[in-house]
Length: 72
Image (cartoon, rainbow, N blue to C red; front, side, top):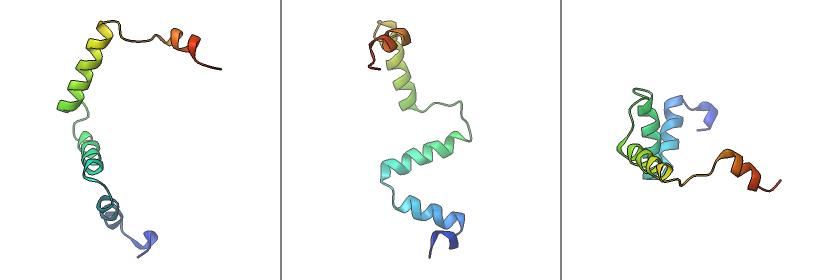
């Protein structure tokens, strides 16, 4: 069956069947965000916390510094 003959559901099933488990989990996370886009997953909270701590410790580059050091 060609893609133009498939229903949307059939095309999704085929796409999901070709995914790794990790890719399927990422897609499921994305779909679940539609229900509650303001809710962060435990992994997102951990990443946000890590980034905040690094920034508080001065581990960042300002946009001005980045622009001054990047090759043109």
